[in-house]
Length: 169
Image 1 (cartoon, rainbow, N blue to C red):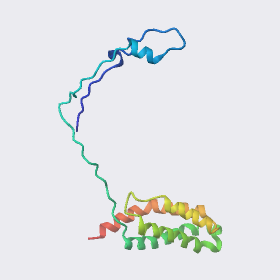
Image 2: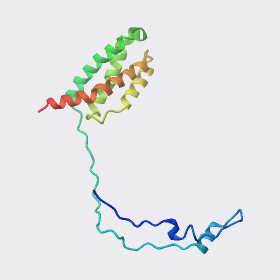
Image 3: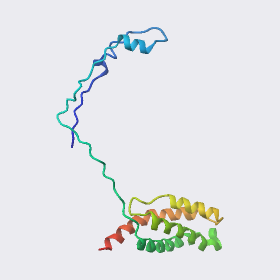
């Protein structure tokens, strides 16, 4: 742990609080007051630290590339789980349930194949895109489907990634 020693100068020791003359006028030329009646203490030109610090470059964490096999597996699992979730509200989707599932699964698969690299890389963007796409296609229950999709991903995706990678040699 590094300990930094810096000189601490209070305002009263520099004269800022004690050197200003009391004023009674409502308007004061502050610049004139500061230059004519303030005493500014100069700090030493050399730091009084007993050690030197070195600048080190920040290390950038690189997330792993998406795994296509995991993306296929997870998309199939996601589709089945989303279907179970949305079937509880069957009257909202009527005959359009398969179209809603296809749209959500397609966008989720695209995200998994192109962007998801493990825990810490789950984005909200694909679920926003789902909502927009479902509304553009005028499919019922767009809000419900997009929200259920996001909750499934938040609850299971990172965990499934860890399990998948713990099985790999």
